[in-house]
Length: 334
Ligand SMILES: Nc1ncnc2c1ncn2[C@@H]1O[C@H](COP(=O)(O)OP(=O)(O)O)[C@@H](O)[C@H]1O
Ligand SMILES: [Mg+2]
View 1 (tube, rainbow, N blue to C red):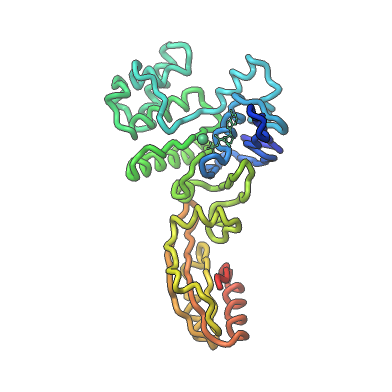
View 2 (view 1 turned 90 degrees about the vertical axis):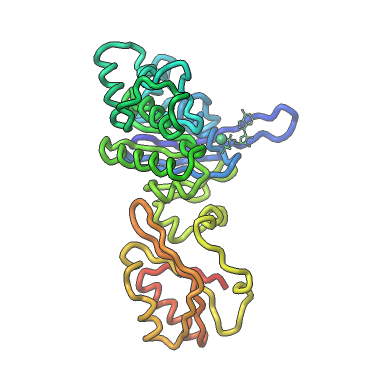
């Protein structure tokens, strides 16, 4: 396990007599080697506080953080400097030194400039696709290129984990995609473990293997990305997902006698089976397809269909248990 967060609580005392703020409330999660772990939450959810606790900039009120088995809050200053090198970070606004070249930025965390480090910095710039830009200053680079320098710099001390704090939030969609592709490539080739903090479900969908949803300092849902996409259970998670799926027009929502509105989720191979045609052939129900789409996740494909089933209550019930027996997740909307 690369990172273990156990029962982490962070309370900020209030200054004005208002109640204290529970920025993080009893958070536990494990990040395994090779994970691309998404932590998604809206503004104020506690994401920055979590990062500050992970990097020991903020001591926990209760609970703890372990990096490669070491509890960071118990470390001396010197040990902490070493432990911090195990976490490489990239940021929304890149945080590069504007008066240093790309190469000098990457060299910076290595402290000593010698031939070996110089060679390593050049190698890292090549790895992120910036071979020809090593002498460029940040002002001469595009947003995507600046983030590539940020990634190379974050890898300078061979960290155990790369922590990405809204790393694509100020990039356009196409550049975002190229940076996400690079992260996946580093995950594949170096086995790099990544924690990705974001407010964009799109980013989680594209590259994460696991995800935790943070709200008011608590983890309200956690699991494999494909499970969360197929069957989100918390309303906030559904809200995050809603921006990815089409909304059903309101006129379909009122209850109609003898009709049931269901959202069907198919995972992986299920998405390719002719389940709906079998349903129509074998049961006395009519199936009206209202919405549908396929999401490509990092690990699998998820199909979503919203259908209206018409028929007797008994036949609709049978139809639903047939679907469930085929591994389709059914959520009755009304
Ligand atoms: N230094 C601080 N002192 C008091 N309250 C804070 C401090 N930092 C953050 N908070 C509060 O903790 C909560 C979580 O904040 P934050 O971690 O910044 O959320 P996010 O990064 O998800 O937007 C918010 O209610 C915020 O106002
Ligand atoms: Mg924040």
